[in-house]
Length: 443
Image (cartoon, rainbow, N blue to C red; front, side, top):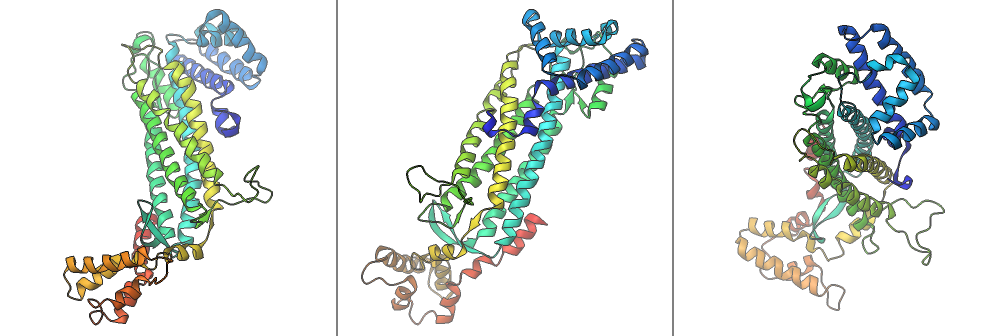
């Protein structure tokens, strides 16, 4: 991911230095487990740990260059690292990687990195959830118009709209917790996964120390259905980001202007039009969501590997693992900040709701006429006729509001009292269940 859309903490997870630290930790833990079993000398395991720790603590660009230099000759990244480590450890390095295969290191390391990334993404989601909860309660009783097909439907609560997004992100958090659990596995089973040259106790020891579970059947690699599920979850979260971003983009449109992104002092919206206040954050989030979702299909394609393993997945994961997690980390933080500072215009919401002459209350009027003894079919015909009369003459000579047309209709006059019509046109009735819904979501 380009630096513009990267945050240092997530980027560091995918850095070569972090990867090599994890590789060493896997190898050192395996040596400790072997020493406990008596497979290798305890003093050798101690030397590997101590000298390796010193080398990793001092790891620099020069060390990275040295590993790259070795890999240029060996054409094998794990062997290049083990050769570099042997230069640091000395003769006892002969016990490093004993009975193991490269995938034992690579896949277990990837599991650690993905769990590290998931932990950071969970923190990001917590901030998004906190922002949404605060804004939902703030506007719990803020009346706005609900829209279906982008057309005015019936009144709702702006807080309820936000609460719906909160509920979605809460589900997404649960999905990520499960995806993290599924990917947090260790595989140290040797060539083709038979433990022919290494005891399962080694794997169990390393897994425990790294906070991972043991892969039940690893062949030679951890099955990629686990990874696919993880990236599918990231894609679903990205879709939730886009859904909320699109809502903000629509609400900020000039002819709507019910809410808008915070416009910073000194911010410029256009190089040609000084008046512009564009929804750049939510537009950017829409684009990032597309990018994150684009990594789902490659992850699914990685599931089908040949026999016990091949490396067709390798180049894919070297790209999608950092890019998807770095991109989602950035997007979640941008979304949280956008919602924390979102500017809301309740007066404009009321004005928009009433801008169609009251026709948005047609549903309740329909029910009111039915309760008054008019058949539903006749009531629908009466209400639609008067609503269309209001709609077609909106802002034209002879315009009358929906209620004025109803009161002048001989099929309504005398059938429904003014007090009952007042109730039918009261938007507060649409908020009567808000507290109950909030309790269901937040409690």
